[in-house]
Amino acid sequence: MKKIMEDPSKIMRRSIHTFLQNYDRATTAAALVLPFSAALLLSQAFFSSSSSFHVRLNTLFNGAGISTSLDLFNMLSFKLSQTLSSSLLTLPFSLTFFLFSKAYVIKLLSDTHDSVYYLPLLKTHVCNSFLLLSVTSSAFALFLIASRNSYTIFSLASALIYSIILANATVISNLALVSSTSSSSSGGYTAILKACLLIRGRASTALALALPTNLGLAGVEALFQYRVVRSYYKEDRDIALIAIEGTFIAYLYALFLVLDTIVNFLFYQSCLKNVEDQKIGREDEYSIKIQICETENTKICIKCPE
Image 1: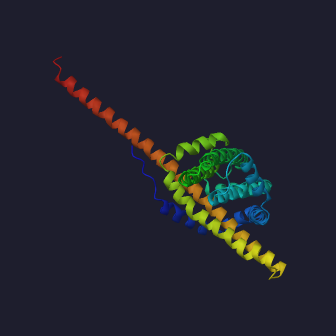
Image 2: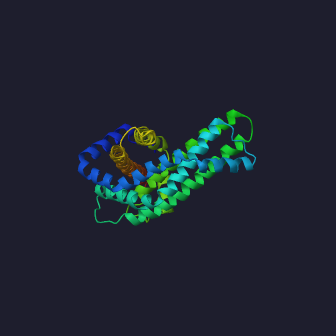
Image 3: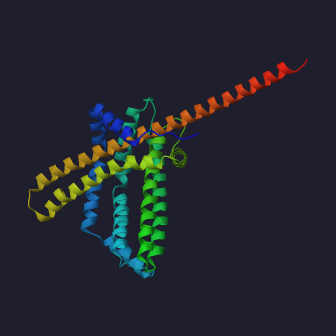
C-alpha cells in the first residue's frame, strides 16, 4: 500500500499549538533543561576562544599525509572539533538535566502518566552517542579520502554526503529517544532499530520538521555569541548585565529544546498512526479477497449437479 504521511506543516502547527496550550508546563521543562543549555552555550564559547583541539586535530591529519589547506576542510574539522569538545564538556548535564526534561515533556504528552521514562531514555541516549560517533567518523573518513586528491569537486560531493548522513543519523537518534519510552521498548539499540523502521519512506518529512527547530537553535547560538561572548571580551558592559542577558538567552535555547521534543513526539505518534492505518488497510484488503473467493466458490457449488 502507498504510504500517506501527514504534511510536515500540519505537524509543526500542532506542535506549536501544543507548546502554547501547555506553556506553563513547557516553561517548567525549560527550567529543567536550562543548566544543559547554559553549559552547551558556554562550552561553544570556550571552544571558539581556544581552538587548541582543532589545531591538534589538523596536526594529526597533516602527520597522516592529509592536506588541510582547503577552507572547506578547515570548516568541517572545526565544526567536528567543536561538537566533540562540547559533547564531552556537557556530558554530565546531558545525562541528567537534558534527559529529565525530555522525560517530563514525554510524560506530559503521553497517555500513560504512571511510567518511568528516564532509564530507557538514558540507555538510548548512550547508544545514540555511539551511533553518531560511528556515523560521523565513517562519513568524515570518506571526506578525508576525497581530500587526499586535488579534485575539489570530490571534496564538495563528499562534504554534501557527510552532511546528509549526519542529518539523517540525528533525526533517527531523536526519534529513537521518543520511541524508547513506549511500553513495547526497553530503550537502547532496540529503540534505534525501531526508529529506523518507522522512518522508512518518511525521511524527508523528518528532515523538514527538524529544520525549523535547528534554525532556531542556531539563531540562539549566534545571538549568544554576539550579545554575551562578544560583550565579555570587549568589556563594554557590566559583567552582571552580561550574566543576566546570557541566562535569558540560555532559557530561550531551552524553550527551543522543549519544542523540539514536542515535534519529535508528535512525529512519532504520526508514524505510529500511519503504520496502524496501513495494517488495517492490508487486513481489510485481505478480508475482501477472502469474501470474493468464498463468493466464487459458492457460485461453483451452486452450478454443480449434485
